[in-house]
Length: 569
Image (cartoon, rainbow, N blue to C red; front, side, top):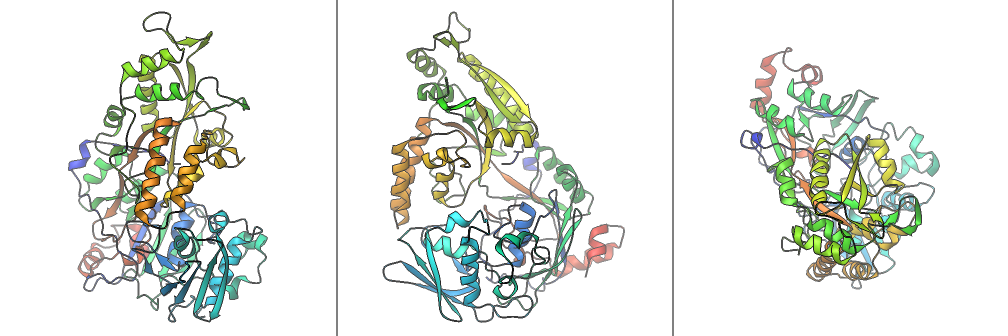
């Protein structure tokens, strides 16, 4: 869950680059653009470098350069079947006729950074490690449909599935980052996080680990013998700043080259620097007002107000979402159309929406028994006022501003809304314990459309640690998700997902508000390639700096960028 960002005036002042999305290993025409260092400014320090356990965003980015998947998706992020996928560790693959197994044929050139070859037994070991409950990997449940991995020869890993699934290729090819058996087999699963490997990882990816100085820097160097071709850059450095403001400042003063996420005021600052540009990339971010359908003080009971579908629908129709987004973001966010973003394969611009209609909202509330004693008064039913509280992460200025506007719009419909700003850790704690009436929520969606089950299914509502924090539960909705997840062709699956989205929007367990337009700040000499919605860093090995621009930078001398001069090869 992250904060949003906004601004209008800067939108015409910078170059918005939509980088081409092409897979790792695809040649890019860039002349003599080999060499140079890119410094990425981040606020979060790493925790460990071990993909089964990594959830920290900085560690995830670093892991993405050190380790490899069997295959990579293109920018369309298709997760049904293998259309648009390109081999990474796997040169090619073949399906069994009954689709109950997939044989991945490894690239014989692939090797670990210690020189040992990557073999099928590494793939089998990796699956077993992820699936072992003693490992405690968050990805364990995501590979539950994989029954086993066999190795008929040293370069073939066959994944066997418990039953057919549209996303079985995605599960096998991308949920696992392949790990070296010869270095990890002797480590007990419970000891992985504290192992020497987790602090000094050895992978097979385009960059090898150099050093990690906690709270300061992570450094990687190009593997010049990488099996898919030498990375264009010599080195990658993650420069760890003390807070989000400092991450941007380091780029503005020339101490770093990239910051992944710009807030509203930063866009004008970037536009004022001739040597910087704002780079636009697709988003999987979704932000919404979430209603809790259970009583936060007694989860055995329904919420006295928000469990009523008519009340939720009325509140949604009392909100002018277009006005909200324009007021807070202008053109730097889009009105959300539901539990899906424009970057996802199931996005549909024609999804039916609850209209902005204050008159219809009042009629619905009247019919549900919520009436006002006089014009402009707070509505009540059986002596209970139409009153609830919205919790808001105070660290997010856009969500705070939007909550104030929501409060005003709902007051026009006769609902009294109180805002409760919370520091981010407290807000997260209140969300996860489900101790709230409503919340200004946000999340990074899974590129897989089936990920919706984690946030809205009945199963996720009833599980103690599930992510359905609002406890929405509908057997009809669950059935549509089951139907979508069982379809092996994209068109059929999308029809069921569309029906599921439509039902969810109509039941209004949330008011979907906006999806942000993502911008990174990038030094102009750097040419980014293949920024994906799920992982902007996925193709860092293909980013490049033309030789002429590296030479020009070198001529500036040591007064220009301390980190660049110090780090330059």
